[in-house]
Image (cartoon, rainbow, N blue to C red):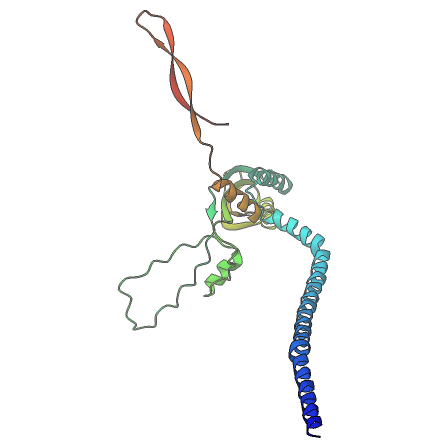
Length: 273
């Protein structure tokens, strides 16, 4: 009887050990692996959903590409990626012919790099306030559009864009003198400000000669916004090392005492091909 009890106890103990070993050696690793797989699957599904959303958004943006390209072309006519002086001068000639004036003088000065708008000057001090012993000089701002000048006069700084800097935005001073009458001169000035090329008028002077013709001089700026892609190409070209010059003999004629000419080689640097 006692032997049967011992055998039964050992059998129960072995069964418990087998169940525990099966749990720790088989079931638990499988469950952990399944949990890891579920988490990985959830992460992949989340990435897939985000990728699909991005693809859907890009497909929607692609539909706008023709319209954006058209808008860019129109803006590039207003502010091109280069000076395009010849095309601008031809446009002025056409405008003068259409307006009925004669261009007597046209001048395009050296380009001026853009600088951010200068903050508006502080309000004048109240009566009785002590003046500053050393006045601070006010820097001269680069010409900005008419709205920016009006805003600065109103006492606040016009907004600026960090992407527009002196390295990619350039102003070119322009001075145009014409001869005509009042209606034709006004038509010409209006055409200057409303043409395809953006033109900011900064000065206008008129005088009438003895013959009755009106001489007008309009001063202002046209603008250039450099293409970032072209700027990258220029930067890459600037970083490319120049070819190393090599020395090759070049004959020169030197008279000898007998009076005849004998070629004498002398080194002359020429760029390597």
